[in-house]
Image (cartoon, rainbow, N blue to C red):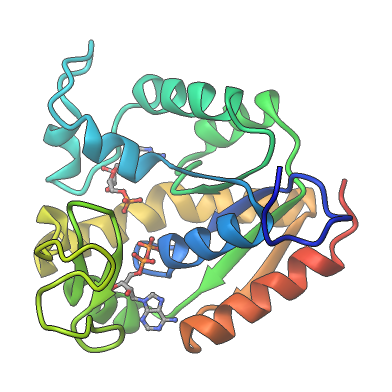
Length: 220
Ligand code: ADP
Ligand code: AMP
Protein backbone atom coordinates (compact mmCIF):
# COMPACT_ATOMS: atom_id res chain seq x y z
CA UNK A 1 0.00 0.00 0.00
CA UNK A 2 1.14 3.53 -0.71
CA UNK A 3 0.79 6.50 1.60
CA UNK A 4 2.87 9.35 2.80
CA UNK A 5 4.29 7.77 5.94
CA UNK A 6 7.94 6.87 6.27
CA UNK A 7 8.55 3.43 4.80
CA UNK A 8 10.17 2.04 7.93
CA UNK A 9 7.17 2.82 10.10
CA UNK A 10 4.69 -0.01 9.70
CA UNK A 11 1.03 0.44 10.48
CA UNK A 12 0.93 2.50 13.62
CA UNK A 13 -1.72 1.85 16.29
CA UNK A 14 -2.29 5.25 17.84
CA UNK A 15 -4.70 6.52 20.46
CA UNK A 16 -5.58 10.21 20.83
CA UNK A 17 -6.99 11.18 24.20
CA UNK A 18 -8.28 14.55 25.32
CA UNK A 19 -11.40 16.40 26.35
CA UNK A 20 -14.13 17.31 23.87
CA UNK A 21 -12.77 20.09 21.65
CA UNK A 22 -9.10 19.31 22.25
CA UNK A 23 -8.57 18.75 18.53
CA UNK A 24 -8.67 14.95 18.38
CA UNK A 25 -10.70 14.88 15.16
CA UNK A 26 -8.61 17.58 13.50
CA UNK A 27 -5.34 15.83 14.34
CA UNK A 28 -6.59 12.28 13.71
CA UNK A 29 -7.41 13.12 10.11
CA UNK A 30 -3.85 14.37 9.62
CA UNK A 31 -2.25 11.43 11.41
CA UNK A 32 -4.32 8.94 9.41
CA UNK A 33 -3.12 10.55 6.20
CA UNK A 34 0.50 10.85 7.32
CA UNK A 35 0.83 7.23 8.44
CA UNK A 36 -1.65 5.72 6.00
CA UNK A 37 -3.85 4.24 8.72
CA UNK A 38 -7.59 4.18 9.42
CA UNK A 39 -9.23 6.99 11.37
CA UNK A 40 -11.50 5.17 13.82
CA UNK A 41 -13.87 7.58 15.52
CA UNK A 42 -16.77 6.38 17.62
CA UNK A 43 -18.38 9.84 17.54
CA UNK A 44 -18.67 9.84 13.73
CA UNK A 45 -19.79 6.20 13.68
CA UNK A 46 -22.50 6.93 16.24
CA UNK A 47 -23.64 10.09 14.44
CA UNK A 48 -24.06 8.02 11.27
CA UNK A 49 -26.24 5.58 13.24
CA UNK A 50 -28.06 7.93 15.59
CA UNK A 51 -31.49 6.37 15.05
CA UNK A 52 -30.30 2.75 15.26
CA UNK A 53 -32.49 0.75 17.67
CA UNK A 54 -30.39 -1.08 20.26
CA UNK A 55 -31.20 -2.90 23.50
CA UNK A 56 -30.39 0.42 25.17
CA UNK A 57 -32.46 2.74 22.97
CA UNK A 58 -31.04 4.89 20.16
CA UNK A 59 -27.63 6.62 20.32
CA UNK A 60 -29.41 9.96 19.79
CA UNK A 61 -30.99 9.87 23.26
CA UNK A 62 -27.55 9.89 24.85
CA UNK A 63 -25.65 12.02 22.37
CA UNK A 64 -28.04 14.98 22.28
CA UNK A 65 -27.87 15.11 26.09
CA UNK A 66 -24.07 14.92 26.11
CA UNK A 67 -24.05 11.55 27.90
CA UNK A 68 -22.05 8.46 27.02
CA UNK A 69 -23.68 5.89 24.76
CA UNK A 70 -23.74 2.51 26.62
CA UNK A 71 -20.55 0.44 26.39
CA UNK A 72 -21.95 -2.59 24.49
CA UNK A 73 -23.05 -0.37 21.60
CA UNK A 74 -19.75 1.47 21.40
CA UNK A 75 -17.54 -1.58 21.97
CA UNK A 76 -19.19 -3.35 19.06
CA UNK A 77 -18.40 -0.43 16.75
CA UNK A 78 -14.75 -0.56 17.78
CA UNK A 79 -14.45 -4.35 17.43
CA UNK A 80 -15.70 -4.12 13.86
CA UNK A 81 -13.59 -1.11 12.93
CA UNK A 82 -10.36 -2.52 14.34
CA UNK A 83 -10.92 -5.93 12.74
CA UNK A 84 -10.69 -4.19 9.38
CA UNK A 85 -7.67 -2.02 10.19
CA UNK A 86 -3.98 -2.99 10.41
CA UNK A 87 -3.05 0.44 11.65
CA UNK A 88 -5.33 3.07 13.07
CA UNK A 89 -5.70 6.27 14.98
CA UNK A 90 -8.43 5.89 17.56
CA UNK A 91 -10.38 9.05 18.38
CA UNK A 92 -13.11 9.35 21.04
CA UNK A 93 -12.64 5.88 22.53
CA UNK A 94 -12.07 4.71 25.26
CA UNK A 95 -14.17 7.17 27.25
CA UNK A 96 -14.39 5.25 30.54
CA UNK A 97 -12.30 2.65 32.37
CA UNK A 98 -14.40 -0.29 31.30
CA UNK A 99 -13.89 0.67 27.63
CA UNK A 100 -10.15 1.05 28.32
CA UNK A 101 -10.00 -2.49 29.70
CA UNK A 102 -12.00 -3.79 26.76
CA UNK A 103 -9.55 -2.14 24.37
CA UNK A 104 -6.57 -3.52 26.26
CA UNK A 105 -7.87 -7.04 25.78
CA UNK A 106 -8.30 -6.42 22.07
CA UNK A 107 -5.11 -4.73 20.90
CA UNK A 108 -1.67 -3.41 21.85
CA UNK A 109 -1.16 0.27 21.19
CA UNK A 110 2.05 1.85 19.93
CA UNK A 111 1.29 5.21 21.45
CA UNK A 112 -1.36 6.96 23.53
CA UNK A 113 -1.16 10.76 23.24
CA UNK A 114 -3.07 13.20 25.40
CA UNK A 115 -3.90 16.62 23.96
CA UNK A 116 -4.07 19.15 26.77
CA UNK A 117 -6.18 22.30 26.35
CA UNK A 118 -7.63 24.48 29.12
CA UNK A 119 -11.38 24.38 29.70
CA UNK A 120 -12.22 27.96 28.67
CA UNK A 121 -10.55 27.33 25.32
CA UNK A 122 -12.50 24.07 24.89
CA UNK A 123 -15.81 25.88 25.28
CA UNK A 124 -14.77 28.47 22.66
CA UNK A 125 -13.66 25.76 20.28
CA UNK A 126 -16.79 23.65 20.64
CA UNK A 127 -19.40 26.41 20.46
CA UNK A 128 -17.67 27.83 17.33
CA UNK A 129 -17.23 24.45 15.61
CA UNK A 130 -18.94 23.92 12.27
CA UNK A 131 -18.98 20.65 10.36
CA UNK A 132 -19.70 19.60 6.81
CA UNK A 133 -22.49 17.00 6.86
CA UNK A 134 -21.48 15.81 3.38
CA UNK A 135 -17.74 15.10 3.78
CA UNK A 136 -17.20 15.37 7.55
CA UNK A 137 -14.68 18.25 7.42
CA UNK A 138 -14.41 20.37 10.58
CA UNK A 139 -14.12 24.17 10.74
CA UNK A 140 -14.26 26.89 13.36
CA UNK A 141 -15.97 30.23 12.79
CA UNK A 142 -12.98 32.08 14.20
CA UNK A 143 -9.98 29.71 14.42
CA UNK A 144 -10.39 27.72 11.20
CA UNK A 145 -12.94 29.50 9.01
CA UNK A 146 -13.84 28.25 5.54
CA UNK A 147 -13.03 30.51 2.57
CA UNK A 148 -16.72 31.38 2.08
CA UNK A 149 -18.79 31.62 5.27
CA UNK A 150 -20.95 28.55 5.82
CA UNK A 151 -19.63 26.62 2.81
CA UNK A 152 -17.24 23.64 2.89
CA UNK A 153 -13.94 24.37 1.10
CA UNK A 154 -13.56 20.74 0.15
CA UNK A 155 -16.93 19.76 -1.27
CA UNK A 156 -19.14 22.87 -1.29
CA UNK A 157 -21.52 21.38 1.32
CA UNK A 158 -23.50 23.66 3.64
CA UNK A 159 -21.83 23.76 7.05
CA UNK A 160 -23.90 22.99 10.15
CA UNK A 161 -23.49 23.11 13.92
CA UNK A 162 -23.63 19.83 15.82
CA UNK A 163 -26.70 19.46 18.11
CA UNK A 164 -24.41 18.88 21.07
CA UNK A 165 -22.18 21.93 20.48
CA UNK A 166 -24.50 24.31 22.32
CA UNK A 167 -23.04 25.88 25.46
CA UNK A 168 -25.34 23.94 27.81
CA UNK A 169 -24.55 20.53 26.30
CA UNK A 170 -20.86 21.38 26.03
CA UNK A 171 -20.78 22.01 29.80
CA UNK A 172 -22.42 18.63 30.40
CA UNK A 173 -19.97 16.89 28.04
CA UNK A 174 -17.05 18.44 29.92
CA UNK A 175 -18.55 17.22 33.21
CA UNK A 176 -18.99 13.72 31.77
CA UNK A 177 -15.39 13.88 30.56
CA UNK A 178 -14.07 14.78 34.02
CA UNK A 179 -16.09 12.04 35.67
CA UNK A 180 -15.55 9.19 33.20
CA UNK A 181 -12.67 9.93 30.85
CA UNK A 182 -10.16 11.79 33.00
CA UNK A 183 -9.60 8.48 34.90
CA UNK A 184 -8.78 6.83 31.54
CA UNK A 185 -6.03 9.39 30.97
CA UNK A 186 -4.70 8.62 34.43
CA UNK A 187 -4.86 4.90 33.65
CA UNK A 188 -2.65 5.29 30.56
CA UNK A 189 -0.34 7.53 32.55
CA UNK A 190 0.10 4.76 35.10
CA UNK A 191 0.62 1.92 32.65
CA UNK A 192 3.35 4.11 31.28
CA UNK A 193 2.82 4.69 27.60
CA UNK A 194 1.08 8.06 27.68
CA UNK A 195 2.68 11.10 26.12
CA UNK A 196 1.32 14.59 26.64
CA UNK A 197 1.18 17.10 23.79
CA UNK A 198 0.32 20.79 24.18
CA UNK A 199 -2.94 21.21 22.26
CA UNK A 200 -3.08 25.00 22.45
CA UNK A 201 -0.90 25.92 19.48
CA UNK A 202 -2.05 26.16 15.89
CA UNK A 203 -3.22 22.89 14.27
CA UNK A 204 0.13 22.74 12.41
CA UNK A 205 2.09 23.14 15.66
CA UNK A 206 0.04 20.51 17.45
CA UNK A 207 0.50 18.14 14.52
CA UNK A 208 4.26 18.67 14.57
CA UNK A 209 4.27 17.80 18.29
CA UNK A 210 2.31 14.62 17.69
CA UNK A 211 4.47 13.55 14.76
CA UNK A 212 7.57 14.01 16.85
CA UNK A 213 6.10 11.71 19.50
CA UNK A 214 5.21 9.04 16.96
CA UNK A 215 8.62 9.16 15.27
CA UNK A 216 10.56 9.01 18.52
CA UNK A 217 8.40 6.30 20.01
CA UNK A 218 9.90 2.85 20.61
CA UNK A 219 6.93 0.70 19.78
CA UNK A 220 5.89 -1.61 22.61
P1 ADP B 1 -12.40 17.00 19.20
O1 ADP B 1 -12.44 15.97 18.09
O2 ADP B 1 -11.31 16.73 20.18
O3 ADP B 1 -13.73 17.22 19.86
P2 ADP B 1 -12.06 18.95 17.00
O4 ADP B 1 -10.87 18.44 16.26
O5 ADP B 1 -13.38 18.72 16.39
O6 ADP B 1 -12.02 18.40 18.54
O7 ADP B 1 -11.83 20.50 17.28
C1 ADP B 1 -12.81 21.28 17.97
C2 ADP B 1 -12.92 22.67 17.33
O8 ADP B 1 -11.68 23.38 17.57
C3 ADP B 1 -13.11 22.67 15.82
O9 ADP B 1 -13.95 23.75 15.47
C4 ADP B 1 -11.70 22.87 15.26
O10 ADP B 1 -11.72 23.53 14.01
C5 ADP B 1 -11.06 23.72 16.33
N1 ADP B 1 -9.62 23.44 16.52
C6 ADP B 1 -9.01 22.23 16.43
N2 ADP B 1 -7.68 22.34 16.69
C7 ADP B 1 -7.47 23.68 16.96
C8 ADP B 1 -6.32 24.44 17.30
N3 ADP B 1 -5.10 23.85 17.43
N4 ADP B 1 -6.47 25.77 17.53
C9 ADP B 1 -7.70 26.34 17.41
N5 ADP B 1 -8.83 25.68 17.08
C10 ADP B 1 -8.72 24.36 16.85
P1 AMP C 1 -17.46 13.04 19.85
O1 AMP C 1 -17.76 13.14 18.39
O2 AMP C 1 -16.24 12.23 20.15
O3 AMP C 1 -17.46 14.40 20.53
O4 AMP C 1 -18.67 12.23 20.52
C1 AMP C 1 -19.99 12.72 20.45
C2 AMP C 1 -20.90 11.92 21.36
O5 AMP C 1 -20.94 10.54 20.93
C3 AMP C 1 -20.48 11.83 22.83
O6 AMP C 1 -20.90 12.97 23.58
C4 AMP C 1 -21.19 10.54 23.27
O7 AMP C 1 -22.57 10.75 23.45
C5 AMP C 1 -21.01 9.66 22.04
N1 AMP C 1 -19.76 8.87 22.09
C6 AMP C 1 -18.69 8.97 21.27
N2 AMP C 1 -17.73 8.10 21.60
C7 AMP C 1 -18.19 7.43 22.69
C8 AMP C 1 -17.67 6.43 23.54
N3 AMP C 1 -16.43 5.92 23.34
N4 AMP C 1 -18.43 5.98 24.57
C9 AMP C 1 -19.65 6.47 24.78
N5 AMP C 1 -20.21 7.43 24.04
C10 AMP C 1 -19.50 7.92 22.99
